[in-house]
Image (cartoon, rainbow, N blue to C red):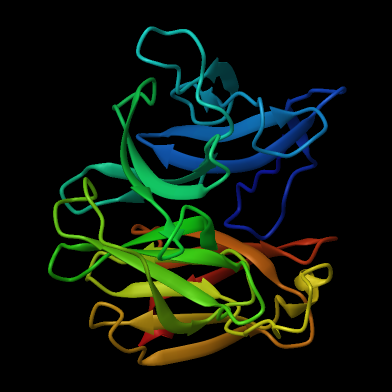
Length: 301
């Protein structure tokens, strides 16, 4: 199922779980919500056995203008003739650029078994989407990926250019466990060759929040997973959860604050900036419990 909980008192209390989509014979994968013009849109896809990215269909579940009642569940990303949908595109929390455009980070796996990342731009009512980018990291002499790219996040730099930080799943014991990056100087329509950063990452999702003043806030687990770990217990390396803040386009980080201390698992951070409250609202989980934190803007000084 896909469920929702709500708070009407700034996160002090929360409702019981409301089931907004129920598929008793299927799994519901990778729900990700984006709010645009007082409407909430949840991207998700159902799965029945097998690998998560095979023969699945993308959906977007939307509210009416009240922003509360989910009334419409649509299949999206069909081909140009409106027939077969694109299979299992993983959609992440989007970013509204300073020119008003919305970009949603996406990842998918094609029939060549290579994982790609890119972005898609919705129209105003989120009924059609234009896709840009087909970014992957291949070996120098063949199509086999040396790093599987996945779970990307978009930063708009102070000069207006874009950067994408990407979870890189190492394919081999000598590959670094760090975030990868690609850049765009044309609003996300084309992207550079991906390259590894110096930001540690244990093979997990990060979250970027762009502030109106140009600062970039990164929530992530700044830890490298040992190359000796085969990946079966990779979740235990998703600690600690930190907030890094940059005022110079991610050239440096003037603030590094620990949200959850090691060895406690704290993964899949997500959130948004609220201009009226002048605060960041952050959520994460530890495989058992969901957590919520409000971070006032003055805490980032």
